[in-house]
Image 1 (cartoon, one colour):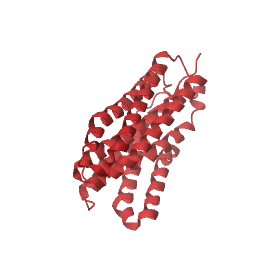
Image 2: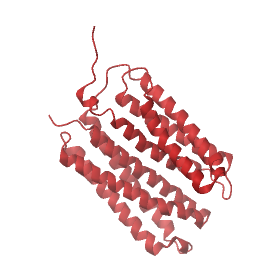
Image 3: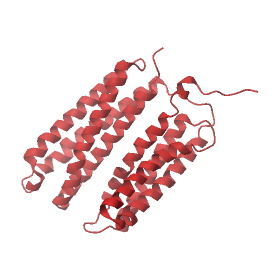
Image 4: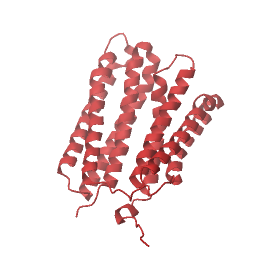
Length: 279
């Protein structure tokens, strides 16, 4: 009888998919906020806002689980530990919101987001498993290079959004609460940081021939910088919502930048982890 054995490369990375799934799960609340912001009504939680946030989380979790399942699933079955690893941090964030803001937050935001996240994760994992009836596909060096270039594109997009969509309205005199004399230099510095990180990723993608200690260390450092950039933009993104409707566009763009930075950080770390070793 013919037996199919998992490649050595995949056997060493089985536990890594749970960690990746948990990291992606931590980003789900940001995705919910971004989706809800598009339909926000000041002073109230509209049905459109709640539905948009829940739908955004469902699509995000489905896409993540579909990708993770195709990366490592071996048959027509759902990998429950990977699904649970994504749902667990989402549940923790929702419970934290309840503890801080009260039970109404659970009904308005936490419960719909949690339910949609669970449903999306299950559907994505199921579809991904059905698409992987062949033996495990080992991620090639070419796909890792493409992933790094995609991450670099996200970082460049963040820099462009800051330069063209955030900094100009912040510098307008009629929004003194935005503190342009302090915010604008920080935004320029973050934009430059993202461009530098993108250049490093492209250099790694072009020159690398496989995973090494140096490439892993550099990619990890770039992922850390992307996380720092995203967290630095999260404060202004929430603060600008209080400066009137005219600043809402800048706030939404900043939330997009936060999501792009954090997603890029996770993908960079994932790619460095999945990079095939040099022969």
